[in-house]
Amino acid sequence: MGYEVEVKYRDVDHDALRRALAAIGAVEGATVDEEDSYLNHPARDFATTNEAFRIRRVGDDARVTYKGPKEAGPTKTREEIEVPFAPGRSDDLARVFDRLGFRPVAVVRKRRTSFSLTFEGRPLEITLDRAEGLGEFAEVEALARDRDDLPAAQRAVLKLAEKLGLTTAEPRSYLRMLLENRAQANI
Image (tube, rainbow, N blue to C red; front, side):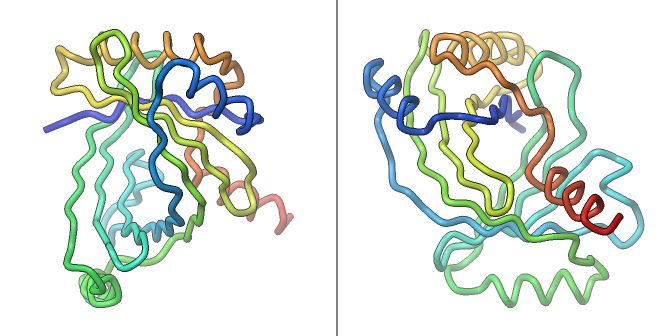
């Protein structure tokens, strides 16, 4: 079992952040288009339990991700379980969940460029995201092996973000922001 430890930042100048990442030796990865189809459980409301369940598509690749309830602390921290599926089978996967009673909630689309860096002995990932209809963001993320590793992972994420000059934290998920925008548009 692992824990995702991250902080999302809004109003980010991607060009300036890209230069800052290069200056500290971060390695730029590929830019990909991600499509996250969020589903709700047939017998419990994930919005109430603070969980998330999605099918992520990146090209022909698909994976299912479960994110557990948020843990207390200075970062967005939650258990994450991710399972890849055979390339090109995401439609079959969506049909299986439909037949099991899962219902679509929303689709979040983003263009993401990832950077990797070892910071204070810990591997970290920094992503520059352009989320459709939401704007430009950056995320700083670490994986914690277990609960005992959470404080060290949280410190590393926050310290790197400070070093990069990231200041405007956004606690909401892309899904939450998208749903709130829809609700405001319907008022």
